[in-house]
Image 1: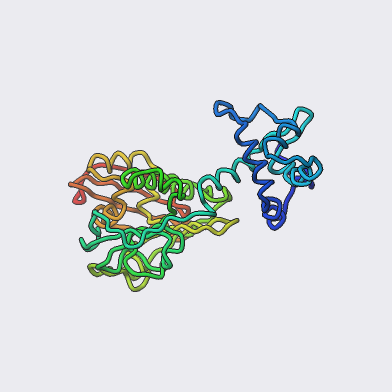
Image 2: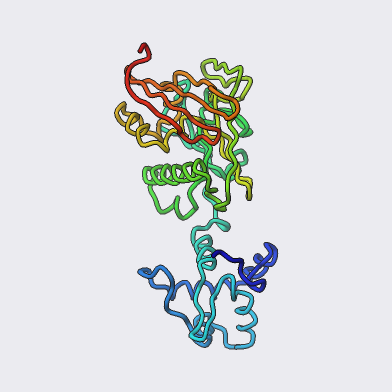
Length: 324
């Protein structure tokens, strides 16, 4: 049975940040973190009060206890054997080591070797600029891009970036491979109903552009994107939002992945080409309950899928050509 912790283990957000806002308390977390054994899922080597105080470098026991006590319960576990770092404490140390709140890597119009899928123009990378505000963007310098709502034109992709340490510890090729892996798992988590940020539940709303029309190099004036159908997925807790084109919802279905592999499309790297080249038709079969039929074709090979109101694949058939 799942139960709430006792009241003394609960912290309001302002109290939690106040607890962590002292160098001695952070030093305590780091010393307990060093004590962990990498081959253990749960730390099994507690430190005594005296061991921990000496490791932190504080002589005054009462002063040390003053800083240790607020950490107990939420960040540090204490029993008759000693003190052990809780998983919540590990999260704090991990964020500090990653430089998530203390460091920043900036990309400002760094040339990208991949041409724009929409117009073939030159593309650039941007991250942590005044426009991208902490996000990582791939932007075309010659057309309007794939979607609006970003504060700048030319957006082809807008995602989370790696942490500063995750960026600096990789060469460019490794960075983009790691970013691709991270974003893939974030989007799939959101599509399957788990917020990748806070793990809260997510609500889904299908959005269909009734007057969808895209000119070369321009977004649709009605929906401000090149995507006729998107699923807007919003976390019920932290309000994290993903606008997921319908073709990406199909990636939960293994037969879709086989279809793409058979025709030399990478399901993540080529996501814009999948929309532009493979998606032939999208039809709303029912408004209530919502049901969307999608038809994709590559080299005469046809795939027909149906999605429900949450973007889940309900049916999928492959085979034949568009003329059949």
